[in-house]
Image: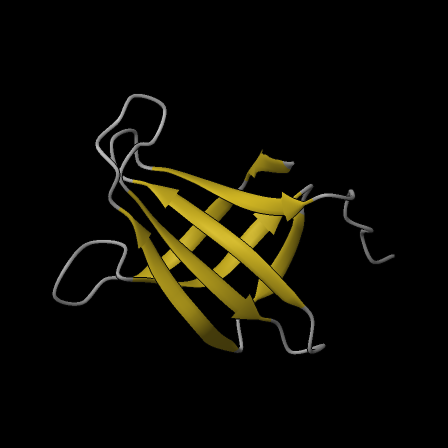
Length: 89
């Protein structure tokens, strides 16, 4: 099961607001985004499936994360698949 952990995200805004993430903050730690390696959309109008953008991002230490931006409430999440994440020291 996926878990969503709220994060703060700084974005590039081009032709639309929050076009793509540049860095995210989790537990007072800043994660720079080196590259966006994939991007997809959630467009299902059913309840419980808000419109959202997903970004698979790579950090400079070559780790990968999935960020979710829910449009309705303008909230960002780190999506964790299955196991909990291990935070670097």
